[in-house]
Image 1 (cartoon, one colour):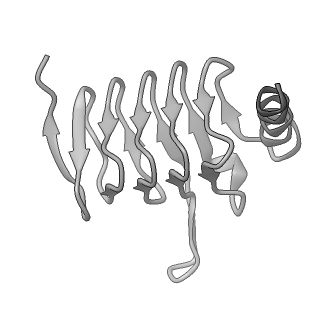
Image 2 (cartoon, helix red, strand yellow):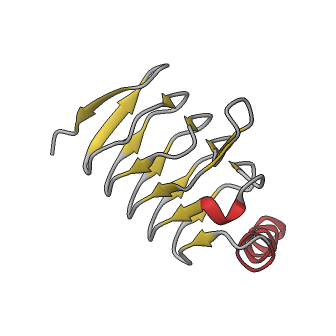
Length: 123
């Protein structure tokens, strides 16, 4: 019960206070790190799943970037993966645990490794 309440409070803070664009059906682990440096640059689509300790970035202080990062519908982020700032992840993509995504992903793709190797998913 505490975890469900914590998730609801966290979602309210992310969307209302910080202005993140997160679809109500997206499921985000309470330990996932969604960038607060540029919160208006976070766009998470419907039915996305972000597992524990996954990181979604919207800034790069070394280059002075503050950009939009988009996770489209039904994207799955594995535990401890990292999505670098300014990327667009297509619909129905899967990012393996621990992967570091440095390039945009086409719809229905799979990413694994560091840096991530992106390939089309087999259906």
